[in-house]
View 1 (tube, rainbow, N blue to C red):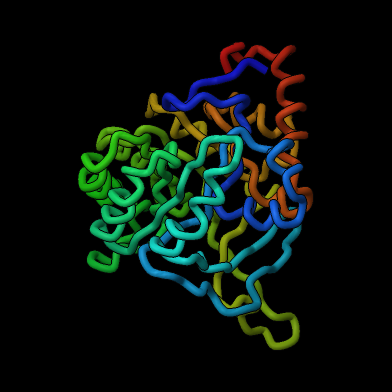
View 2: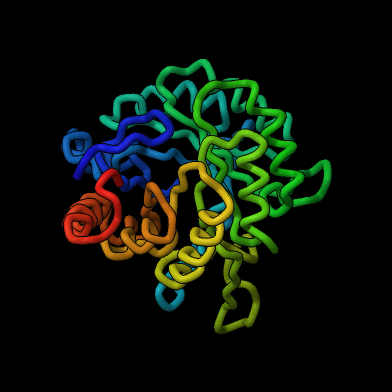
Length: 296
């Protein structure tokens, strides 16, 4: 497969991981240096980093659904200081570019995170997780075009690094949010994040997940991902990262045909930690016979 350029970042192929679905540090402990020699993704997207440490949601955190999974992990992380001191030096040793995913509950929190990573040469790009509520306005940042635009206007001047906005599918008009993000300075967009879902304890009828609701992912959301990637591609001209239910090279090709430039693999990595390599190989074979431009 021909190497590609994504926002000025050279990548060997179009397959990356979805944030929070592949723990490269834990994988290295399990598989040793072989992981770095056979790293399954062309770039690594970190788990979400918040300003302060988070413990995440109480257990239970997972529920399997037909063709998918509901997770209520709650974004546990060491916070900015812990990430810079402990995780970043380890992730910088990976053989691929590092994209750091960040989230804040106010624009100023996001700005502080972006500013902190702006000067770090180890970080190739930042992904803004806008699926959380702004505690000052009560609106989910990624569900409202004006909220997304205001966030980008605040953080875009802080760094020359690519800013990828990870859109939430739980919006009334995802395409409108995407267009607002591009106009306000987003370098690229990624979608879809998980859909909101819920599971009940079959014995008690009470919510099973410790966080009550969670995010639905896996093959069950693939059709939604295709529809939203296609809709966003019609109203934007920045690079798109498509994700949602990718299990094979054919799934990846479908997202590319819908408008994606890169494809992220998430839930399937829980079943097979190196599935990214298989999907990249399958995609390369399909691209040789498809009508998708050879530059992909």
